[in-house]
Image (tube, rainbow, N blue to C red):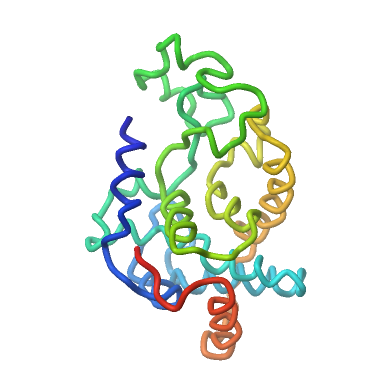
Length: 234
């Protein structure tokens, strides 16, 4: 499967070494065509999300950092990371190996996918089973999964809810439409609560008031030091 090839290729983490903050700055070179706020540097969106979470959940520092880094996988759009096309990096994600739920955006176009008529894949559960856990479900490739791989393989100490948010924040059919809920195990269900909290800040925290980057930078650098190594392989 193409997704498995992408995961295998990018799991090598052989593109470059840099810190989390360096990647935040690098993200300013990225233009996400699916983002309505194209006039805002990407780092502003990250910091606006993080600062909004920090204000409402002051004791959950892992969630502040998760908000800051959740979109760093969009560096896949840059030439040094393979220059992947927009459709392969941003936008909603969806499970493969089971029927395409009608909750998926532009559902009618899934009829063009060969899996649509494959009897192994076109039932509700497909190749999976109730309660199998999202970790066992193949999700379409994108910036979510790449950043999850980077964080996990570099030994982050973020709690599982943080990794869950990073990995599935673009899986809108699940966390906004409750599609594919049958695959969740108990840990997924707990983590989904945090993803839904986070989602409010991801979509609606963008404001016209720019965050003073230099003012908040020391705080986020301290969180990066707490939860990540100084340099990461990407």
